Amino acid sequence: MKEITVISGKGGTGKTSITASFAVLAQNHVMADCDVDAANLHILLSPEIKAKHNFWGMPKVEIDAEKCSGCGICEDLCRYGAIKDGAVNSMECEGCRVCYHACPEKAIRLVESLAGEYYISKTRFGPFVHARLGVAQENSGKLVAEVRRQARELAQKEGRDLIITDGPPGIGCPVISSLGGTDLAVVVVEPTISSIHDLDRVLKLTEHFNVKTAVCINKWDLNLRNSSTIEEACLNMNIPVIGRIGYDITFMAAVMERKPVIQMTSSVVDNIVSLWHNAEGILNS
Image (cartoon, rainbow, N blue to C red):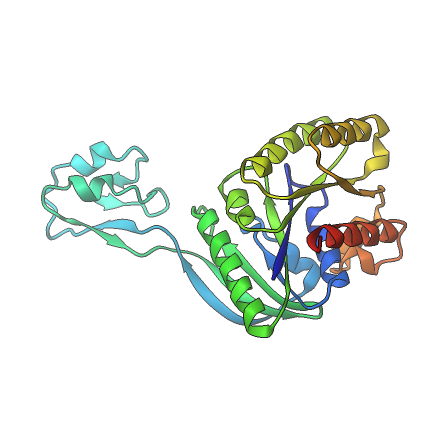
């Protein structure tokens, strides 16, 4: 079983649109949306949810009023300001457990915290695993790991030989969680100064974790000089540029119609097909 993960140094590069197009072009695969903080692949795939599961985050705390002596130690120690007048604000609590260990009366107990949900769905392109992190909830890296685990189990169960993952943007914990063990990371970049800066950070991350990496330049024709800068940087790092997708407003039109851009009449269709064939070649090499 192989896994290809599409990531980007910043949001808004077209990463999800490209991932959805891969879902159309690939065969015998499972899709996973690991951008759990701002999941939107479902918009393009229109999934039919078959199973829904709770995702439990780090435990938070509650104070047992009958045991509490009102000493105020927990309130003094809480650096997040989550405890006041003997009560815990669950929205402010980070689950650090300092109060739990410091309470002389053992009046503080741990309680499970519902942090979100993950789903097993059916789409017209194949099975799909996705999730929704709750408002102001942490542990998105843990939820990413759960989505990937469910996708692998589903692929094994149904005899699928490929997982296509829409990864999170940036270089934080969710991205690291989405990259571990993947066979190929495709980094989508735009020819802008900010995107080039973020690309450098992402490439250093994939190099650190020894992940095979390739780059796709989206909207490459908007700034040919910056596109050349990206290609030169990739050449110096021995990273192949496997796709160049031109600017086309059809990307936005496809989102409005809730379908992958590759199913639209567009000048970029051939670009995306070429990108997929190049990525598939690396996966199978």
